[in-house]
Length: 257
Length: 257
Image (cartoon, rainbow over all chains, first blue to last red; front, top):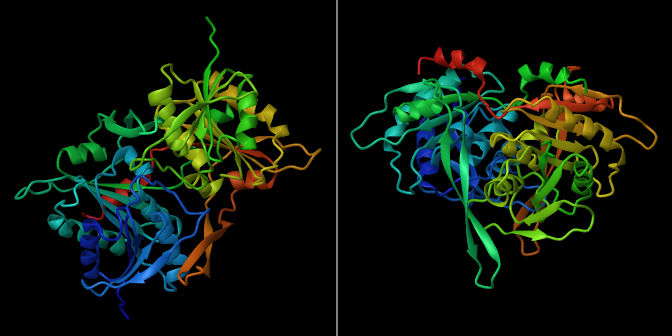
């Protein structure tokens, strides 16, 4: 029997975000879809999990397709844990997270709620992909992403992506009528965010800060996600969650600790 | 002039936790110490940053040493960003995070606030180390850690640890009178948390969950942090924040995307 794959869809912008609504519709064409997503925006939440407080999770009604949906008070990583540990009793064949409103390329992968959900699924042995678009607007145009998303999803399913690998997919913003240059498999560009803190005064006198930042790409390579996006390619970075710097073990061994 | 190094101390258990108070005292022997740490516990916060709300950060008084201390309403990663971008105008020579009340070995590194602070410092180009002890208790015994911490800190400073590397150091719990077997440089063990969700009812009727979990080590290797800890060694894992699975790029390239 050729059963349709069971696909878990989540995100970090919240279950009502246009990005996830688009992704749900695309995934309905591929398999049986379960949505477990945060009830409110969770951007920048990294791989946060909810240990010290309660988590609410309830089934909600939807009118836009056959998918089954749960709205959850927790973080993106919580959603994946709940889906696997509590909601579903069948094996999840694929987890997709996004489509994020805003890029998660280069170092942003470590701050990203979208990617933390995908990584959490990877940790739990589920093939998984995070999708992000270079447009923060709630009115971002997701119309032209379907073909590429289906290609990448089918690539993962057909090729049985190795356990321990998660794909970080980012789409450049293109104007109406423009086309993507193609899909590029890349490495994560070396770069970081330079923060600026805007100091303000609370009406009652106490200082507080707003954090803002500007991404700085320190990588001149043409094999990076940042280069691909700058040149209107869709970037695909295979990532892993074994953070060990294996090549540096021998150096530390020479320190004589 | 042989100036004493400027050391940033932070953690995720909050600025009053016995673990960080111990680490501050040890670091006072090595250099000039600035503490920027969360005003409340932030365990499991992963690499969360505060983008959508305000951050308070204020200088506080202390009576236990020459260090200068700031208490911050943000996450561990926020603390490092604030220290570098707002509080300090001198180069930070070293960042140490911890000592965490509880292990951050194996996959726990991705959920850990302690390690996210250390990784954030690494991203910002600061040599950095996260320290954790296998004891969740507020009354954990940190007395016997000083010698090893100084050895590792001096190892990093003397050997000018390569940029892009961060050390994840975990201490096994040993009984009074026992000694550590030594320090082992390791790789991150393959393992994951198996979650259980305890479902309860709110007094007004709505279901909610508590997340609990049990770590499962799937790694039989004797070169892992988990093996080291199980055998009473202090584990040191050099980690990196380039998450690219470089060896898998060629496989994805064969998918014909």
